[in-house]
Image (cartoon, helix red, strand yellow):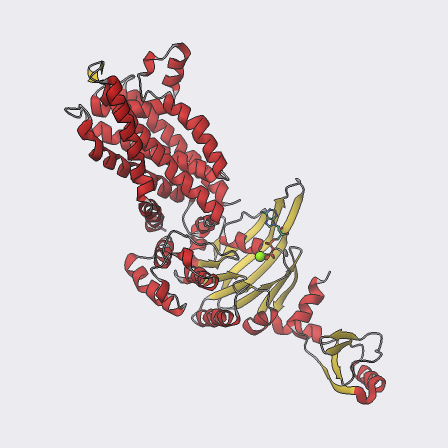
Length: 299
Length: 251
Ligand SMILES: Nc1ncnc2c1ncn2[C@@H]1O[C@H](COP(=O)(O)OP(=O)(O)O)[C@@H](O)[C@H]1O
Ligand SMILES: [Mg+2]
């Protein structure tokens, strides 16, 4: 079963100057149940808008969203019930304690009193917030607030967990903890959709990605397939001495160089002949997600 | 799928919100009532109106005004604040339909209005020359209907308004004049000409009238008319509230 399906989904905003602006343009995608799916794209690509339409906080201009067989337009409540969302912005009820925030929020998902009082201490433990349970959320540090947002999103055990840049502005330790938790939840059967700035995170976490640019899908599919597709035409080599002239087609990527392949054998010969013993290493390389990303979204 | 517990949880949260600030939300209105009563008590003395004491006339009007104010303020403040800090996003994602969100906020408003009323009455009733309550059920009904009606209005307004300036505007230019022309301090019929008609058309006048009738037995217009007017207005507000909530949460 698909955890999520969107069909020709679009969102048009009316800007301040009265001009329409298409933030999400005809997006058709799906996520199989049990998968971790990365949604990538530069700032302003429309990721959050897409997510907001899925969670029901933004009305689509056209198109369809189905969450576990519930069309969000006519089965809004049922679909909201199975979604957990960590929004991009940290917003917290300042007047309430950490415990109260979770208590009322999970209540709004219909979790019984007994169950709430059982789950909250556990979740606080997992997210290392137990000591803060009865303190006002106002006084939490940024990282703690972020963890509380995550606790809010998973307390009702959603079948589809959506995280909108959960690691933006978060230190390395917490980032790793967040992804560990996401993996753990995924193992227990939760389907995950997330966006991130850090491409290496996506590379490590998910099998499938969707790349958005200017509101449109520019790539959608298996990460491995996409990497292969891009690596087919790439030779990567390193040089001892980088102070040298280059072949015309060569691009510098960090400390290394990329060369687009026309004919692998000829090209290898050509590079070897040109750089001779300055050549430190050479191989045909799987493109990193970062390169793919730059390539796809540079237009 | 039943959302009763969902709605009740939102209601509980909103009750908890004003309980945390009970000095401001429940207690401080009592001070202004006491001041009004002190001043009017001196001025009107033992004067009567119809066959009731003038002070109890004013007292019942003030109590009704108190409920109108606190039930309107509760949801409108809470919603405008949550828009400012962004916690409105919670309401956008939880599995509660728009009517449920409105009902939870309106019910919390009613709870605060009743709590304020009970506190105030307990503290002030001793100074009022009131021997008996005319029709306690009518008074309770009037109190509940008033709390819900203005709770719903507060939800509509809180959903619609973007900032506190809008709230100040509505309070100063709409609520205050309405309260002034609602027969809180004097019978509507004593107003000159057009004002008297305006007063009778003022929906708030019916709340004051019904509540006052329940406590003292004094009525400007038929209590039944007032009751029908309040119920009809509340039903319209209930529908309007759903439309406004849906629109505001899907922007
Ligand atoms: N409410 C809105 N009104 C007008 N434009 C908006 C609104 N929300 C988002 N946008 C625009 O839509 C585009 C996509 O935004 P967003 O979905 O937040 O991108 P991302 O999350 O990928 O960074 C941006 O250009 C943004 O300015
Ligand atoms: Mg975003």
